[in-house]
Image 1: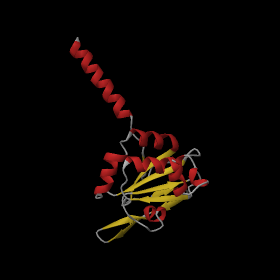
Image 2: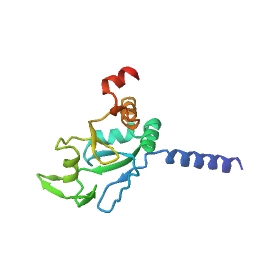
Image 3: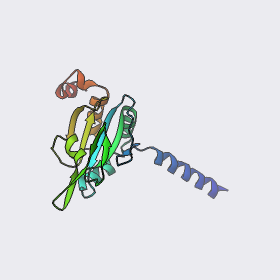
Length: 166
């Protein structure tokens, strides 16, 4: 009986743990996004990007980061090298072969041609670019950025002012 109870507790703990994650939409040729008036956060990555994997492992598993993203944003993951056509914000974006790999036009569009990975793209409720956040960031810094944008402080104060007050 004790063994069964321990197993039940272990399964319940695992279930609770596994549910505490970011509810990403993986953007591909069939994804339909309705942001319901929420801001959008896009994790732009590639399969070969080591820092993208570190971001997934260290930052996107932090409980506070998870809660802010799930509550304040529509979270989207997008492989910048996705090879099929993508429909996003009433536009079609295609894959363009270049060198050994290539790039999906959406990645180029979202970053205004400033490609680097990982890249976090923040869009407002109307799909307008708020800002780009290139590179890997630890959870503590990332939480500050998420709060600054998620709580609309960016509309009334500079990043420097926000940091001074928080």
